Image 1 (cartoon, rainbow, N blue to C red):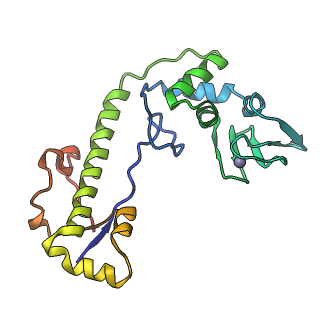
Image 2 (cartoon, rainbow, N blue to C red):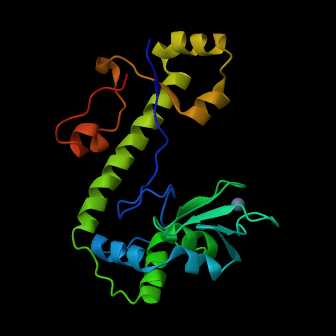
Image 3 (tube, protein in one colour):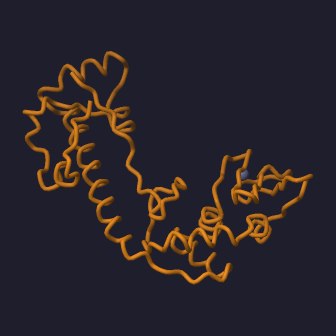
Length: 211
Ligand SMILES: [Zn+2]
């Protein structure tokens, strides 16, 4: 018996900055050098000051967190690295994340807004669409695999022992759904797995069976 736990699928930042935001409603991939130029040009203290009050304490900067109710500042700003972190609600990130969260923008919109502020002319990265297409196919293949393994665990005739084992540990269907638990049948019994999105198709070197 093999019980497979697959990681949650997320779309990562197309600019290569994993800011934890799961998906983008609109995708325009700008040149990474331009994005870095913006990052270097914008002072996070001045950016945050436009939204909330910031106090200087010695060499540190503290702000009233705009993401939760508070009277004493618990958001720490790091101008050298361009980062913020709130010790009250754990909100944190870089200048792009701050603009996304405070102005309800997607990543591309935040880049555009900050480019304007920094006076940077944005160039579109011509290879980004190709890279994103490949990433998208990989994400879809993983999602497909996750659905296959979860469904197999829930109703596969050969997964009875796995279901019994999980019930014995006190895990019911809600836990299976929440943690995307799955049953991996022997490789000769993967009939039903959609071939048009097989790992081999999206990953030229093939993919090893999940354990
Ligand atoms: Zn906060």
